[in-house]
Amino acid sequence: MAKYVAPVQGKVGQIIDVIVLLIMAIGALYIPLWMGLAGSSKDPQPVENPTWESLGQNPAMVEQWEKLGYSDAASAAELITARFDYSFSITALIVMIVVIVGYYAILLRFSEKEYREVIAEKFGE
Image (cartoon, rainbow, N blue to C red):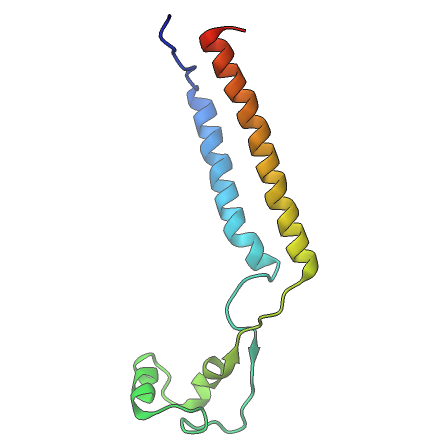
């Protein structure tokens, strides 16, 4: 039986692969931010004339805020009172499910095709 030698990909193909993967990685990280589906706090609770005590900060916390450059309570109030938005969209959930299932189906289809090609190349039809 002859030893299997895998086909060699050309340099242009490798460069195109790298560019496509880079675009996909950046897109996967940036698109959720662009669509407003990711990020930290979404709903700051306004406080009238905030003080460190009204914001629930003890002296150790105040010291740390000052080390971060927030010398008064008013400048840090928006960060301290911000709350996370735990709501989600059913539409976004359904779209995500369709994308994941579609990706899995495409992956299986291409893998099966390539697997059959390798078997046919190594062992014949």
